[in-house]
Length: 453
Ligand code: NAD
Image 1 (cartoon, rainbow, N blue to C red):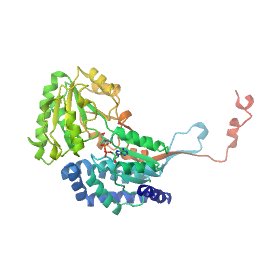
Image 2 (image 1 turned 90 degrees about the vertical axis):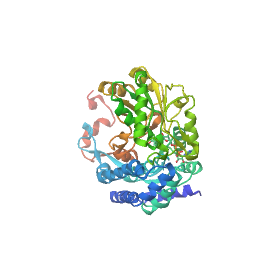
Image 3 (image 1 turned 180 degrees about the vertical axis):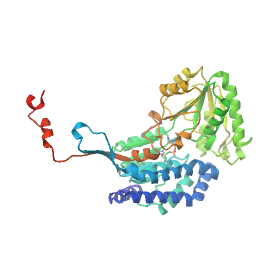
Image 4 (image 1 turned 45 degrees about the vertical axis):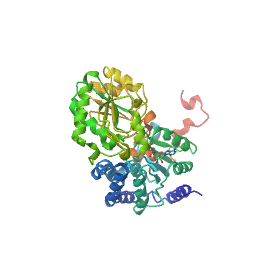
């Protein structure tokens, strides 16, 4: 029997004892997870530094802070989320108990990605624990230092049978996917997403797929371009552009392109100094493979700012590309790196058309003072989320379901959505064995006299 098989069996056996059912147990585990983050903050930040060259404060700001917030919210709200949810009755059930009872699904497989190795892997776990599931946690092998720390330390805080960490690469993930789970929660690229869904289909296991894509960013010429570009620069170059919801490319009118370039240059300098390479708040590309991939995407485009790189350090300077077209190489796949192409369009009509001709993205960004224009973009495009006049921050609003649509994914999470996503919402109807008279209509014989029509 493989290690993966054993781990899943053990998780299921433990789940079937019913120990995850009491809310006190779940709250205890969630609080232990919180303790893990606060007591092992140093291990976590050091691992991320080695994986992605990120600063300590950067990791706290973009990884652990939100995670802690999600755990605290789940602890506070769990009783409310897990309680029976009465629903509207019809006249036949007016005297009955009619409600929805969330119940645990069973054993969940969480497959994480490397770009925010802690937030992305442990945030679904918060939902899995809150909903009363067991969960097998598979961190990405690409962020190997974080995966190792997770494997070595998490079991000291959480129930080790119910929430085991399985490390490894493609072979181990595929072996896990051969096992039967009650839900698979995958974060990563769309190609592997398809494989995950195929494997899950063999067991009729539902999936949540948190995928990526090319999130467009339209800048309306009438907006405050300076503020817009400052926010876009932050959203794009944080984590070296390795953020699933980073604005992938800019759409704007030709008349503002050079202003946009200048403002972004100004913000890059403000955030990362003249020399981002030696600045601690600017990280690195995860590995040589991705370095080469991102560098190759630049081919054939005009560099308007940045463009410097150092393969030995996996360093790519924040880079702006101008006069890019829909056919350029950089527009053929999600960039997932610090390149920001600008494509000029004649206005919002063409921007909407450009967006709609492509796969549905994770986010559509729009910068404008004109509320009507924003509402129009909402009405005429589709994406996992729409954010106007800022970047990334919708991720921090726990009340908003976070997820994609179409090629950018299916299902959603965060806050109560994580709880619901990893619960079965069971319909419950409790009748009494009284008032049998009212049922006479439904029993044969269905005579006209009995029915009255
Ligand atoms: P990755 O290479 O770490 O892969 C993700 C997971 O899939 C890993 O755990 C890996 O072991 C597993 N895997 C890889 N190949 C496999 C295979 N052939 N069979 C089975 N399992 C396999 O991460 P990635 O895909 O490079 O991540 C980047 C992508 O993830 C980007 O597209 C990004 O937009 C997306 N992403 C999405 C979100 C979101 O919340 N929607 C968050 C982060 C990243």
